[in-house]
Each structure stands twice: as structure tokens, then as C-alpha cells.
Image (cartoon, rainbow, N blue to C red; front, top):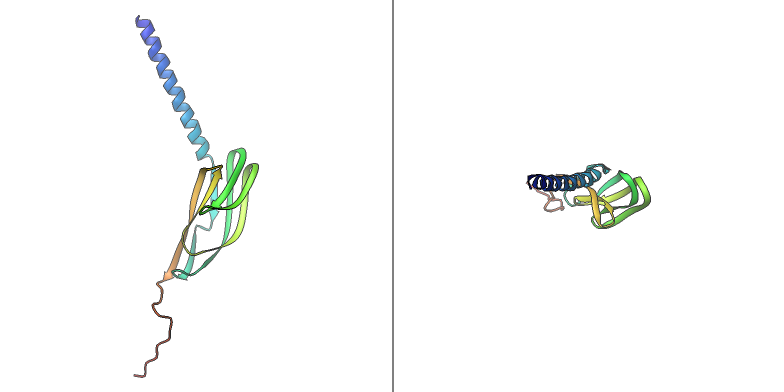
Amino acid sequence: MKKLLLTLKYTGFMAILAVVNSLNAAESNTSAVQLRVSPKQCTTLEKGQDCYVNLKVSWQTPTKGDFCLNMQQQQLRCWHDQSAGVFEQELIINNPVSINLLDGDKVLQSTAIKYAWLYKNRISKTVRWRMF
């Protein structure tokens, strides 16, 4: 009876260990995905102005597959049966944007391009003249 109980405990422990190992393997595959985006920030003189950026993206995964790159729900490019890719395009942004590498609907990696400005908006753009 004691031997049977020990065998059941050992079997249960091994089953839990197998589940934990499979979860760790899935997590390590996701963390092995690399997404590099340049630049990290786009800066304008005033808030609200368009910011012109030459976006450069490179990515790499441990296995081949069908992957897509998108920005704010807009598809930029897709690759089929690839494990790495490069993308370049000039963009115009006026707020922060998120760049995502997708495998179907699953986001594998995500990064953001910050939007910054140097000066506050001028209240009035008209020139004011003073006589005295």
C-alpha cells in the first residue's frame, strides 16, 4: 500500500514537472523572437506637427513560419515560410505608434516609437505689433 502511494505521488510529480517544462519551452520560444526597430523616438518642434521618420525594422524567430508586421492595426508587410525579415519605409507620425510582429493573430513581439516635441503649441500664430 505504501509503495503504491509512493508510486502515485511520484507519477503525479512527474506529470506536473512535464507540464511546467512544456510551459517553459513555449515561453522560451516566444522570448527567442527578436524585433529591432529604429528609431525609437521621433521629435518635432511643436506638439501636433507631423514627424518624418525612416523606419527600419528587422526581426528573427527560431522557426520558419508566416509572419506579419503591423503598426496600429495597419499591416505593413508579411513574410511566408521565413525565420527572419527586414523592412524599411518612410513614415509620417504625429503621436506614439506601436510596431508588432504577428504570427496569425498572436503578437510575438511589440515595441513603440515615441513621439516628442521641443516647444508647446503657440496659442496664436499671428504676429502682434506694438507701437509703444
